[in-house]
Length: 241
Image 1 (spheres, rainbow, N blue to C red):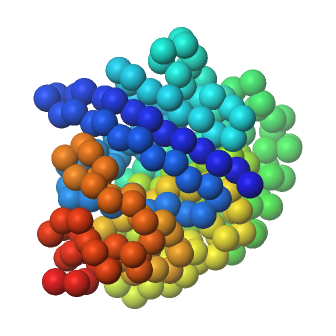
Image 2: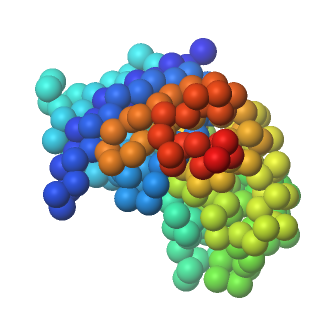
């Protein structure tokens, strides 16, 4: 079983983030009010953010340890990151977007192999028919699937999703929520999903890590937090108010 641990201290624009938490292969839902530090946590784990003090460990691999001078660059971390808005390249086709992560870094593949792997992933996600389309012409749900395909095709050891369903309407969100839950079960490796919807937590079967004001205020299952929420925000989030 893959275990991981994150210890972060970040100071940005008068905002202090100081968190320590860990997990295994069970999905984690990172929740909290706007501005509480959720996206900062994901970006730090992905290696896209300079941090003042950090130790990030995935299995037996140390991705970041500022005290020991260890910093694995973003392209070598084997961490898949789907940011808010999906981060797709509008000037590329669906296939080119999915291939992109296989064309850079030390493990980059030859063009034929990139295409084969990208098409295989698109087929698994039911998106092969979209391969030649510009991503700017896709629906929100289609873009979500393509962003997930681009991350999964790199065979990451850790998957980070920043509000992956937020841009969708209610009907599409319900459908894609179940799709995402199924994919994470098939993924079988650690994942962190930022969400503002308790239904996402329930569907993913996720452990909750709640951040407020740059600090962790509560961790645990949805059932345990419903029994005794540690703040007004959490009481409202889990539906006890």
